[in-house]
Image (cartoon, rainbow, N blue to C red; front, top):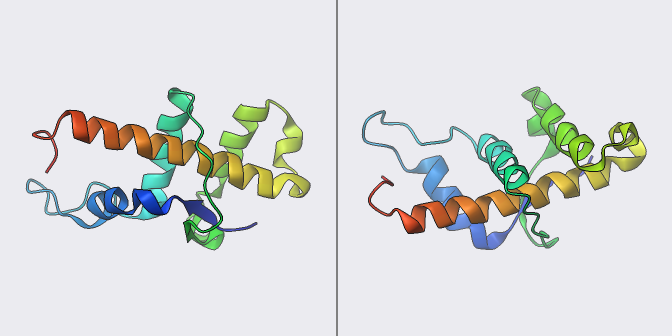
Length: 123
């Protein structure tokens, strides 16, 4: 499977949520970009927002999801979207990646709006 991309425009948010330490815990909100993308894809699915990601987007190698046994999230999102078990076949891996990353991009936009709408809540 190909790598999972994210929009370059989301990089300031990705950086903020994966590296900036929260005062109470001295840890970032998300330990990894992979975890942020999984959460963001869930947000994107909840609000039904898919945003195309250009091929120039930054990427998390698929093997990172696979090695952490979280690649199933990519396929679950594709299956939920397509409502067809064929979404799980090797022939549809690129489509599964595209669906997942589009929901993640939509979720990143929504998370950014939450932070912009509530600036005092963010660390």
